[in-house]
Image (cartoon, rainbow, N blue to C red; front, side, top):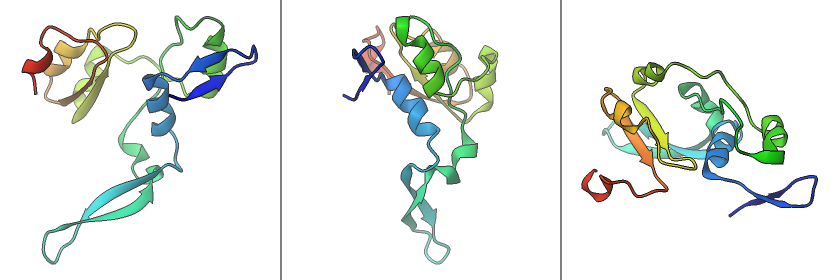
Length: 132
C-alpha cells in the first residue's frame, strides 16, 4: 500500500479512490491496447499511453469530506469536477461503482440502466456471490 507523508510528518494511506483518480488523469501512464488487424481479424496488443483514450472517460472527485487535516492537500493534488445528476451515468456504456467508507447506494440504480456496471466492493453485501 502506498504511503504519502503530509506536512505534519504523519503517514496518509492512499485509498483506492485516490489511486483511480490519479491513474485516470495521468496522460503519461503506459497502457496496453488491442488493435484488430484487417487481414485475419485477430487482435494485436500494442503499447501506448493513457493520453490516447483519455477523452473516453471522466474521472474526478466531486468533494473532499471526512478527511480532516488532509482535505486541503487532497484538493491540491487531485482534479475536482462538478457533481452531475444521478442519471448522467446512464449515457455511458460502462459505469464504475466503488464503495467508499460504506457500501454504495447507487448500485441498484446503475443496474437499472442500459450500462454495464463494473462493481468494486470493499464490503460484503447481501447479494454478494450470487451476482456475476
